[in-house]
Length: 256
Ligand code: S3P
Image (tube, rainbow, N blue to C red; front, top):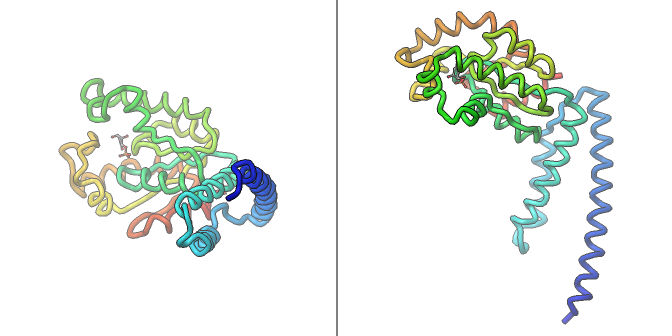
């Protein structure tokens, strides 16, 4: 049997190899960044990630610590995406749109695809105030909530490489749009009133729809807000009957 010193020596050699390989890998990433920048190729290449996953599955299948090794690779890929996002995106991505248009779902998915930070404005307000949105509306009224939103948008100006998921009424105030625009691209997600209704009909967390949970009211309010949503948006993406990957790929392809 080998002595522990011998084994440790081999581990050191291996670590040194891994360290050098990582440098080589990051150098490749740097080249990829340059090519993507020059040719306007999107950061996220789903096919490339899929190919790598398949390769790892083949190599590690049935070997010891299969999951742990895959996790290490996941981290490597994550860091590569972060480096690419940092180099290729110099702005935050703010998602806006009517309640139930998919802002939270799309934000969470994008965050994974691009390895960016996530800021859920509503959640941050709930945390700061120590109350749910319906409680804030009930206790202090809507104008107070709207002020919380505006304060949060100002605070978010310090953030970089962040996906900002905005509450549905946030861009009704022009000052919020102006502040978001300082360092974000604004993406409007849309859906038909019928689709929205299906997505939010069981929600008890949206005071604006209290007592009005029906397609007609949703359509009416959406129409009232439409002009402001469209004026704020740098990019509009429809979400009806589409899967999340498809929506996010379109967004990444079109955002520049
Ligand atoms: C609101 C939308 C909600 C939340 C609040 C008010 C609105 O966010 O900010 O209930 O006025 O449209 P979601 O769009 O995430 O539901």
